[in-house]
Image 1 (cartoon, rainbow, N blue to C red):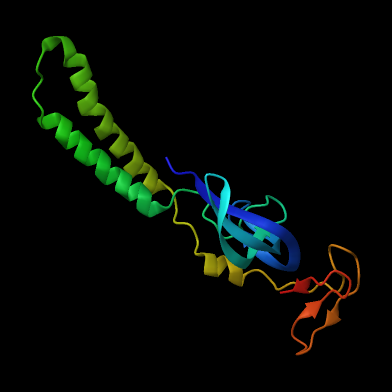
Image 2 (spheres, rainbow, N blue to C red):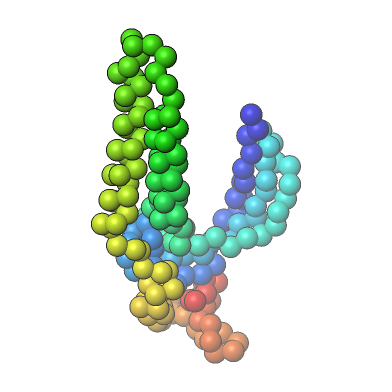
Length: 171
C-alpha cells in the first residue's frame, strides 16, 4: 500500500469572490488561499510542486465547485452493473437445495436494486449546470475588506480592487 498526498504549506489568503457552493447548494462567499504544495510519499515530503491557489467556501470550507452528490453517469453505470449481475446470477444453476434461498436472493436482489435505482433516476430532476448557477450570482462589490475591515483601493488597471493592509484581491 502506497500512502501519498499533498502538503499545503504557508497558507495565505489572497482573494475573495461571490460564488455558488455545490456542497451548501447556495450562493456563498469563496476565499482564495495561496499555498506552497509539496507531494509526499509515506508522509515524507518528496516533490515540491510550487505555489498554488485553492478556492474554498467560507461556510463549509470545501471547494465550491466540487461535486457534492453522485453524478448521474455513475448512477446509470450502477443500473447497468446491477442488471448484468441479475442476468449472471439467474443463469447459474443451483448446485445444492440447501443453498436455494441464497441463490434466490442473489437472483432477485440485483434486479430489485436495478429497478429501484432506475425509478430513482427517472424521478429526480437533472441538476442544473454550474455555468447557469454561476450566471445568477452577482460579482462581489464590497468596498471594505471582509478580513481586516480596511477600505479597498482600485488596482493598476482599475478592474481589481485590493486591500492595502492584507493584500487580498476582490475577484
